[in-house]
Image (cartoon, rainbow, N blue to C red; front, side, top):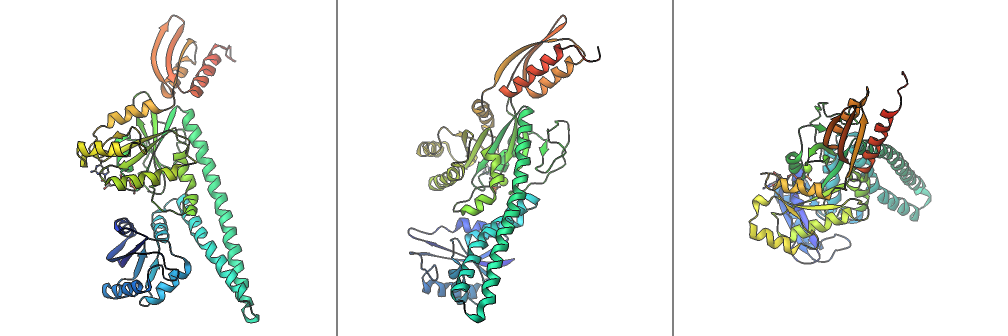
Length: 433
Ligand SMILES: Nc1nc2c(ncn2[C@@H]2O[C@H](COP(=O)(O)OP(=O)(O)OP(=O)(O)O)[C@@H](O)[C@H]2O)c(=O)[nH]1
Ligand SMILES: [Mg+2]
């Protein structure tokens, strides 16, 4: 394990180092020291110069191999700080740290491309800065350097557009799959929320056993009898599983957690992962209700900011981990956060408390279904239409009346339309007759 010191600067108030400590541990570092400062940003060193000397002493004392800033550092600040530290001590900022975690967890083609894209987007303005510096200092002897840096810039841009194309193709495929799933009668529900809110735990609690892997092209239509051995879970990828909420057959998707202060370009590169949230029929926004009111508020704001503009689905806020909160405190939090989280459902994914309340809420909030009654002639293909109805709709009644079958069911408008077409086909004389 690599020893690191975590550092944070805030403009005012007290710096909270708990999140950056957790992030550093998630990346596999051993946090051996910490340091914080409340002051305005110094252009050259980010911290005050004296504080950087203090940091250098702490690094020497703890034998740290890197310092991790919970701030955004400019390229020059990074360089200047490194100059003050013992030799070969790495300077990492919040964004490179998050990218590093993402890079470690990226074990699908899509996640790897997303991380690569984020890295290139991080590098691009730095390469541009270098190129323009080289140009400004252009003297006969430096021509080569300037040319080299400009070609690097072009190279990055070309790579960015190549990766974007590949990611677009993946996104198109996923969109097609979402449509296929809807046509199969599923409602798509996404679990979203701050990292560590308990999304995956809630997913396990709500889901049936059948798991649908994100790269599992073998079952694009989710044949419910197909066994999936794909147990792979990646925080970066999306895991989709079936869940029954009552009448509805729901496909639940667990996604990458939100984190505050994510730079725009990083969110952009994970756009298609978030599409499973934005294009869902319903979003469950999970919040850890065992945290302080302030932490809950901040994380709700971050979540809403991330969802804002793109999200098309209705949102149900879920207060999770209520096994760790007493009732009185929960009521206080509910009241204090009512503007950000109107009418939340309070559950415990861990113990299963109130889960049935949540599934009932999901049913209520999903787009309304239509009720339809069909009278089918009893011919050769009738039973396959009836079993299609059982697979794709909620059948309320099935009655045999002489040479006909009466079926009453509920389904989405698109599925009802399909069912009508199938019924009409039955009434046509068959070709072989
Ligand atoms: N007490 C309590 N702990 C919970 C509950 N749900 C989840 N946890 C714990 O919270 C931690 C995070 O849970 P996860 O389900 O991994 O959270 P997540 O939102 O999927 O996290 P990321 O994938 O990192 O975004 C784990 O240690 C869980 O055991 C709950 O209802 N009560
Ligand atoms: Mg998770």
